[in-house]
Length: 206
Image (cartoon, rainbow, N blue to C red; front, top):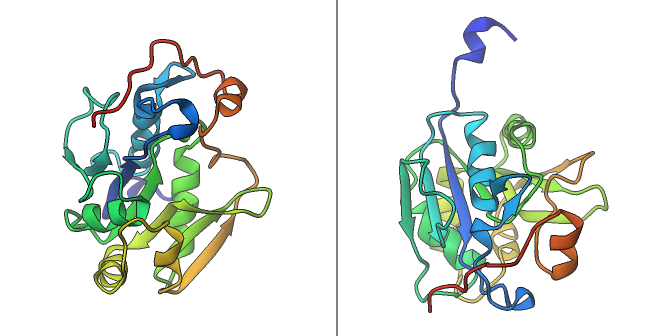
């Protein structure tokens, strides 16, 4: 890669989905949980900004853990807790860049290499979606063409629906990852496996 291309940032926004109820973790706010010294939601944004340091961010849901990063638009899906598809639909309305990285905000291993790999894989498709080492498609680790995502959500019934339904309406490229960078924190066992301390975690706003 040439020195000139290294300084050319992609036209990219981070869209972070963080509005779940975390019922299997007692309803805590997961975004501020610490993994390896970094809040989970901050780690997600840093992964995207590792590719595009000045990119804007849209957070749909909780923002605990992002108080020092700036240039963040915060909103909630309507109604609140109506699911990831609704959150993505709400968030993309605030995206003006060519590409948008759609990420869950509870990924303790997510990194810039994963985001770059997804960007490079989009090609002429509508989006590129991560597939973890077990073969599971990770619909909340993806890079979309913003125009394609906006078109998809405009014609889909998104309330109380999983993110997967958006991918049924587009042309997407699977990106098979060698490392488990899409692993998330859904259970107490997950938290223990990644060294996340749940003591003192707050409960979400109602």
